[in-house]
Image (cartoon, rainbow, N blue to C red; front, side, top):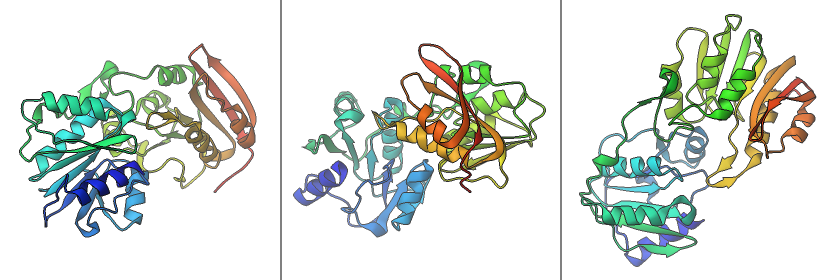
Length: 332
């Protein structure tokens, strides 16, 4: 992959030099990223995403959801969200005594980030190494990017709190709002919010007193922390988990979801299809799935594979609300 190629070249050519001792923080790598150029015993992967956490743990690397203590060096793997990318670099510089390496593909905004750092009064990026459709460069020790650190939480419409990097961090997602407005008065006693983010759909569902248990499943630990603040009461239960692999202790009456459909910048409807298949395995024989999707995403065929009844319950030119019931394949 691009990261592995660039990192190997940078270290072998001397363009980037790692300290001989001390921990190395690797912030935000995605599953499959090649970190083999780094000394394995010194690496701590820092990621809030459960699938990535599980992947790197499986490779024998130490993993954490947040930095702790000091690091001799750091590697930041740029995400596509600009505010989150800035926060990750600022966090790395605040916890690292040595160089902070920044790597990203062109589609992740690496070139604009390099320009921003060159213009910053308190950061000195070295010459970039360009290879495999991306760039890698190192910030000299002592960079001060505290101004890029976001407020711990932000408050939006409805009194909800979110954090930088959360999906719809700046406001309620219109698709989620449309789904919440369409949900019927009765959803059954046990509801699952699959990929529940910072908790908007769960909060809207829980106005129904007939719900006795709601399981919110979310892969991003930061979003889940916000959900815990946005939803109170003993009926809500929170799970840091890959929604496509998690299973409830007992089958549910209803699953609600606004499934993700991007991997990086590329549209990946396979994610939504995996959510649908997982939902079918979580439901009672007469259970129901309610989901919102962008109009162009063709989920109907997948729904028909896993449910006996499928209909479009509502929609407009942007979104469609899909209702499926009676799962035909119980995958327990």
